[in-house]
Image 1 (cartoon, one colour):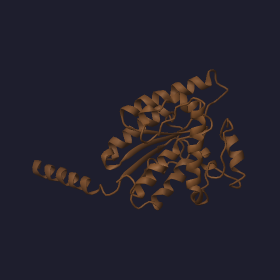
Image 2: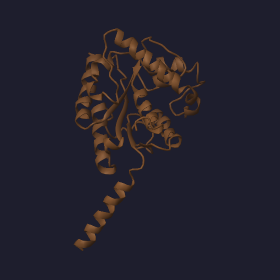
Image 3: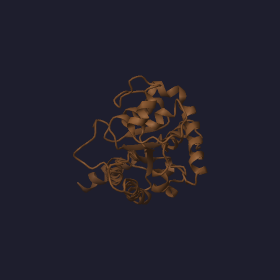
Image 4: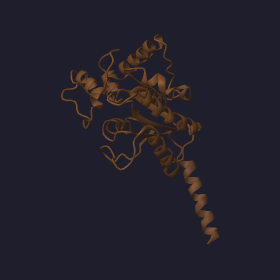
Length: 245
């Protein structure tokens, strides 16, 4: 029996080595609609990158578990250790994607959000997990495909109001990937410009892929509007086009 077990373990190890054909990008999303629907499209787009969306069949907010940033990172660690063989040297990455989404009705709302995200940041740093953070929400990434703005956008409704001008009757459950796809390069360029704008005001916004350890929660939370999701997209694009070779 022992010999059979060792043979089985050897076979699993061989399979693990063989599967390293494409880098794996494991993404754990706070929301189960907008981000999941959009990012799943990259599975069909890419031939040299495997994009894996954790819990992709669980739509809507899961009320049964905490989805705050720190618990999202904990979930990522759990999923990675259980189901994936992540090796950064092979180009593999783990990302947690979530919104700043400040509730201004709460006392000390801004500082509370900074503290909340900083807890996730400490844990993610220890486990080499990247954080894709959008302020105020993921839909800002969509908006940047169509227009550039530095206007403070308080919440999702503020972003949606602008987005509706470009995508009629936008809804979180809509798959708008095909409408966004032609403007990807413009969105990336606008985000670079927006980053420069915030940095001109004294913020420090390192690349969420290559310099993720240097990111601070305070700079992200106090940079509105802003999202570093473009750093994730750019990294996947670079793998697909062989720019990291």
